[in-house]
Length: 351
Image (tube, rainbow, N blue to C red; front, side, top):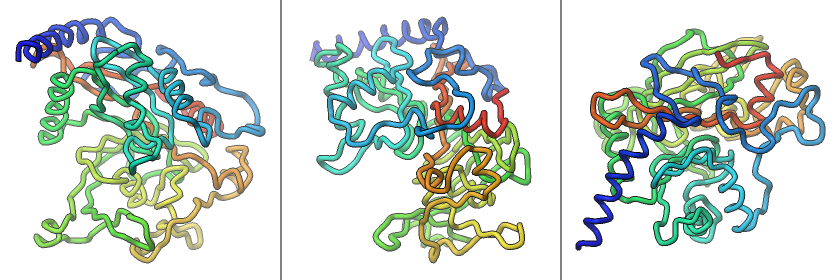
C-alpha cells in the first residue's frame, strides 16, 4: 500500500515538472486560443528522411512509410526513432501510417511491442500504456505514459473536453476535391455494418431512438480549409466525437474524400464533372481513382496511385496546463515525408 501511494505521489510531482518542462521544449508550445497550424515542423526534431525532395518521386513515391514484414525488433527500433518528445512518465511518438495500435492476438501492433519499447527507453518495470493515439490508417501523435495515475488523469481530461465540445485533437488532411464552405461543422449519424466480410462505417439518415440503442452514434467534426490548389485542399479537422473512420466518412459526405482513402472514396461518383454520393451500403471499397491531371501533378503512375497512403495526420494535441486556468499545452507532430511531398507537388502550404 505504501509503495502504491509513494508511486502515485511521485507521478504527481513528475507531472508538474513535465508541464513546466514542456513549456520550454521544442516539440511542445503553449497554444494560443485560435491556434491551428501555427507552429511548423521545422521548429521540431525532424524524423530521418523527412526533408523534402525536389522533382519527380522516382522509385520510392512514398518516403517515410514503414517497410513491410518488419520483425518485432525492427518495429521497436522504428518506434524509438519516432519519439518526438519525452518528459517524465510521458513519451510522445510520431506514429507511421499503417501501424495499428491494437489488433488480434499474435498481430504486430503498437500495443504488442510496448513492453520491448519500454525496456528500450530504459523504463525498466514501468511499462508504457497508450493514452491517446491516431488510428491504423492515419499517421501522427501517440501519447504514452509509464505512470497509470498520469494516464488516467489525462484520459479524464480528454473525456471531459469531448463532453464540453472542446476539441483537443487536430488532424491535417489532403482531400481530393475542395469543400464548398471554407469552414464549418459536419454532423452525421454513423453505424458499423458488416458488408462482404468487412466492417464499414455507414451514415444513417434520421436515426430513431431504436437505432441509437442499437449502436448508431451521432458524430460531429469541425473543419477548416487551410489552402487549395490543383483541385485539392489542405484541411484542418477536429473531431468532437470518436467513431471508427469518422473523419474519412465525414469528408466523403462533403464529396471530398481524403487522398489515399481506398475504403470510402468509391462512394463519391462523378457525372459530367459533377460529384454525387453513391449508396454506402451497396458501394464496395476499391482503390481510389485519380484523374490524369492530378496524377501528373503528383508525379504518380496509376499503379503507384493505387498504393497511395491515407493523407490523414494527427498533427496537434492539446493537454491540460499545470493549473485549471492555465492555457492548454500543445503537442505537435511533423508531417510524414510523403505528406510533405504531396503538399509541395500540389502547391499547398501550412500557414
